[in-house]
Length: 309
Image (tube, rainbow, N blue to C red; front, side, top):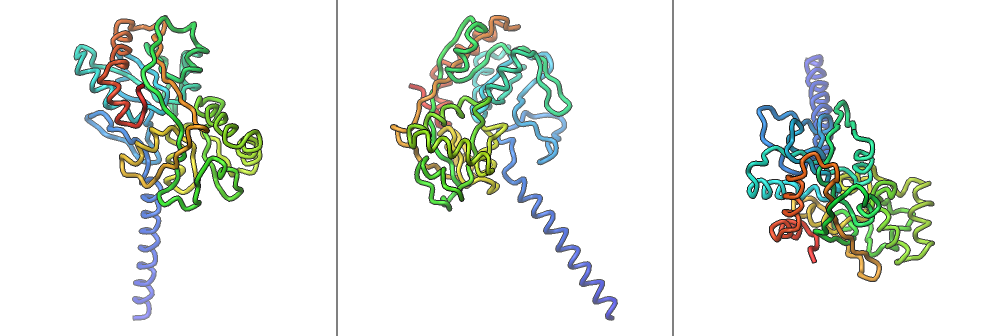
C-alpha cells in the first residue's frame, strides 16, 4: 500500500511538473506573432517559438509585385493587399516584406537577404520608409509619393505599474526601456530628438548611453514587433513606439496602454513610397503607388492609428 501511495504521489508530482512546463510554454508564446492573418494554404506549419517568420508575406514564387514596407506598417498589410487585389484582380501573386527600413535598404543594396535557411533575392518594385531614409536613397527612385504620417507614444503594460508619465521617467534606474536601435530604425533617431526636446543632452545620455551600458535600456533588433512583445512578456516596462503600434496592440486585445507624448516633445514622421528605377515590374509598381495615395488606402492607415493629413 505504501509503495502504491508513493507511486501515486510521484505520478501526481510528475504530472503537475509536466503541466507546469506546458503551461509556462503556452504562457511564453501566448502573444507571439504572426498577428496578421496568414494566407490560406494546404498545410499550415507555423509553430510558435520554433517555425514562425511573420515579416514575409504572400507568394515568393514568381510574384507579380514585390513591396518592401518599413516594418511598422505590418498591421496594414492584410487590408492593403486585399484592397489592391480587388482593384487589380490580374495581379494575384504579391510578395511583401516588413522588416526594419535600414535592413531593407541593405537588402536593396546587397541584392539578397537570408532568414534562417531561406535566401531571398527578389528585387523590390516599391520601397516605403520614412522621409529621411527615402531622401538618402533618392537616386534609387524615379517616383516618390507621401502617403501617411505618424507620431510617437509610450507603450506600457496595462495598469502602468511603473507609473510612467513622461519621457523624463525613462531615465529612472528601475525602469527597463525597450528602445529601437537608431542604427537601422528611423524611429530610433526620431526618439533621440524627442529625448533632447524633453530633457536635453542629459536625458539622452542617460537613456541611450548609461542605461544601455547597464542593460536597463534594451536596443531592439526588430523594433516593430520586439518592443510590444517585450512589454507583453514583462521584459520591459516602457517602449517609445509609433502611436499606430499602441492602437494596433489594443485593437487586437493585448494588455498594453498608451502614455501620450506632448506635442512640444513629439515629432511628426512622413511615410514615402519610392518606385525603384530598376523595378522588375514597373507597371504593377505604378499601380500600387497609386493605390497607396488613394482615399481607400488612407482609410486603412487611419484605421490603424496613422495620420493621413
